[in-house]
Length: 238
Ligand code: OAD
Image (cartoon, rainbow, N blue to C red):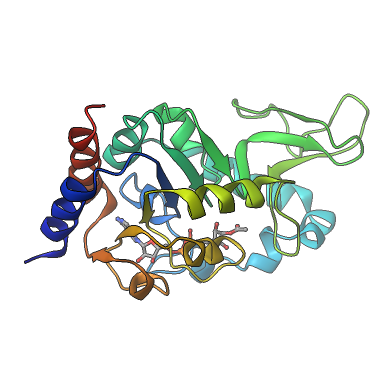
């Protein structure tokens, strides 16, 4: 029996009510957005040290902003984001900064690594909406200090409370769906080990997390996610 059929059968049997969906770059890959580590991945073509650290920003804020403006310009939702959003009471915990779960309509989203469409003053630490491209790069706050993307760079802490809240939800969930993450970046990758019930991974490749999941579905997110979400909705009439 293939993994998707086995997973659907398990969902039909268990009828999970509380669902947490943990996502990584792979959930956005079917929108044409490069992942980080695979073929064509961002970290194969760019050096994280030049673009995604506080030191890189201090050295060359224009270069860092140009890279984030490019990333902001290529985002759009796909069938996986939209299927996940149709499960209105699910909690989505994402490592992605593309904001696509919110854009697709998910209401309950923890963005562990921040969001490309917010900026933050480096002096006042105040965040603001940055949905539109900036007229000038690098952008500045009214106070005169630089604005930075409101994302978590290497060596920085996750947003306060976000990881603890995600951990409690993962631990208590009836079902954990893990979609499109290599499972190698901590602390996010450690969330999976907190869950002990039914867990389903969707990823065309084996990941560091595959063997910890009840079912590992070797498929693209946009192909398999709608089927799995439909089974969850059917089981509980939602
Ligand atoms: P990675 O690039 O490490 O892993 C992406 C995963 O998605 C891989 O396991 C792929 O096999 C899988 N994948 C590729 N195409 C897919 C598809 N169509 N459907 C489903 N899965 C697919 O990305 P992340 O695990 O998200 O951190 O990386 C975690 C963190 O590392 C990122 O949040 C970022 C990065 O450095 C920060 O920037 C702090």
